[in-house]
Length: 339
Image (tube, rainbow, N blue to C red; front, side):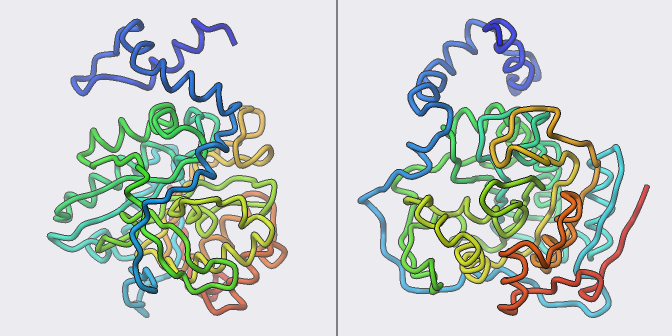
């Protein structure tokens, strides 16, 4: 792609807080270092994805469970479809009990979107920034004392947060966006078969509530990446070591980290080339949002957007077998709201 065209794409998503577009010269100066480092990593980001720190604080074994009590009168999975993505999010959230079921006044909330890749929103590799911004707004409206948006990216973090549009949307809504530093990790015994003692970004355990916001897309190793796989983004260290037994490591992680709420972004769905993607030809527009208190049920329903049966997806089937949730999402309690 011609450089001027690249700059125009980037300028389109990066704006000053007052709403004015950043001047081309100022933008290029600000992101020059990010561009250079992206070239050094060969575009894959593996240098950052697998870096190891020696300055971890050690914590005792714990389960990072932020779940809310099951309400028998409410579904555990809701779905809404609308071209207005904010409307879809609010409809599906209201149907599962509303934001005040999940966020209480004075609480610290951590939101975990997928910000793994140096991609634009149209490419479907990262969570829709419109949804992230609206979730921040809702949490603050419910009385949250602070809302943090963060992720352990695979590509260079400043570029990922910038090009995805997530930093701008989250900050505009009032969140504190945190790009991980080496000193932000703690070592925790996750208690899994594959995942034992591992560095975890502290913001995902030092919080009152955790909202997981994955996007639905193809994955070359795990077949799909939705809610449970998105939790890889809480980990530091050499995550590629976990790929040898990826299904078990995903289940270990889902057993350790139990979100308050899973908000599934199926507004754009990547069918091939995941998790990095790149081609718009691989993405379909589905305009759908789901909310779930059962992360297995959420993944099971979302897998259908990729024409996959949940029972044939290793980590979803194993998670159900391990008692982490219901693979038969209708049995878990399911409601659709179609606008």
